[in-house]
Length: 113
Image 1 (tube, rainbow, N blue to C red):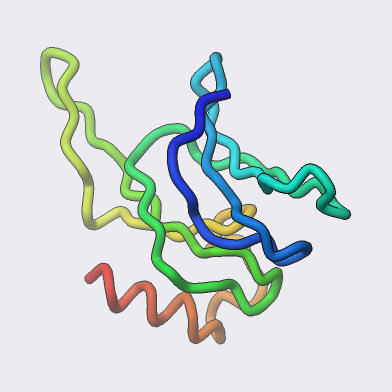
Image 2 (image 1 turned 120 degrees about the vertical axis):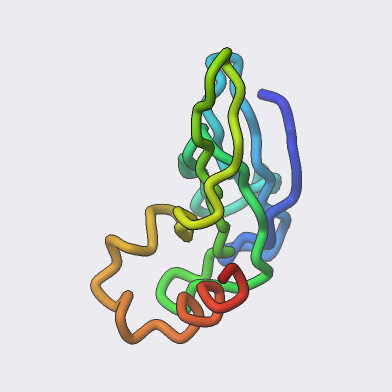
């Protein structure tokens, strides 16, 4: 795995969570502490640009990431689709039951409009 960037701190042990890219081009967020009680690791979308928002999910206390999808153009080129931004913790925020009442999600949405 190849380390890409720090995305925040682990809610279990307080150490850093890093974004990794595997040899098969999958992206994984993983705690850097080998002694972490849960050995926290979860998948992140492999397509699109990933930005750290600096916010934490009130439900699972993980960092909220902004996923900016790519639009495929001709000749294998891409551009960023700023209208299709969605937010991610260990799953997409739009699948959360509390998405309509989540102040953090609303704050992040306002920052990216």
